[in-house]
Image 1 (cartoon, rainbow, N blue to C red):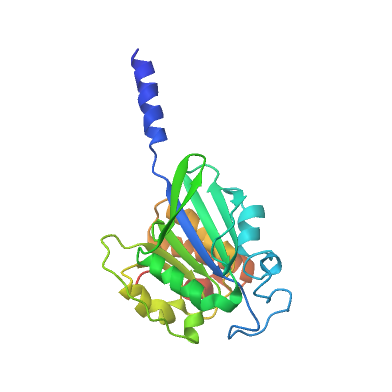
Image 2 (image 1 turned 90 degrees about the vertical axis):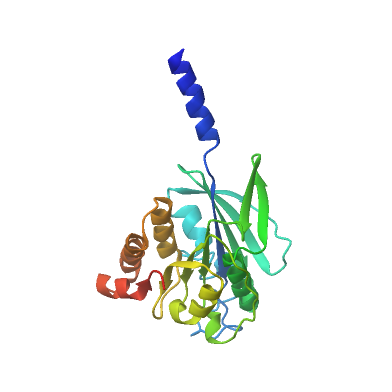
Length: 251
């Protein structure tokens, strides 16, 4: 009888396990509309997610999480009501109760992508998606938010109204010199920069994947930084010292 009661109690606990929701905002690489060093035209067409450097290319968010990881699986492609989001994909972790929503923004609307990311970092505009009877909350209701792409704040400013929040959200910002250019906005948004960058970099998905793995294990910022640096050096061959100095955690 005791074993049966223990089994039922364990089942109830597992069914009530907290679901972790992650939201990744990707501004598609765009030779025409962004102030970047041009990449090959096939990779730099901001209206073509399937071949884009930051989405459908080998180390883009969609391709990397769908085909190159063992701990995330594609769940479904979701039609977005926002015409500036060209593709929206839901992933599920294979052995944790965690879901990742990735949005590919038309590269011409990098400013919209940046604003939506920052407002979500401030807990604004939560968005629910239903999956298998669960109501998953993303946007301002997500537990972890990430931005991938060109650092548009090098070229434009945003004029946003932020609100006080009780619990700062963890952020990952993989864009060139994001600590410098996003710093003021992140501080005003009352968010926590778990991982961002100090210099020019390739904002590809292997560093994001490594950082998320550490976050899911509840590691601190320094350990997560080390994971990201190791991944970056593996692919970029820049030397582990250089990779470590490229990333920062906290203010």
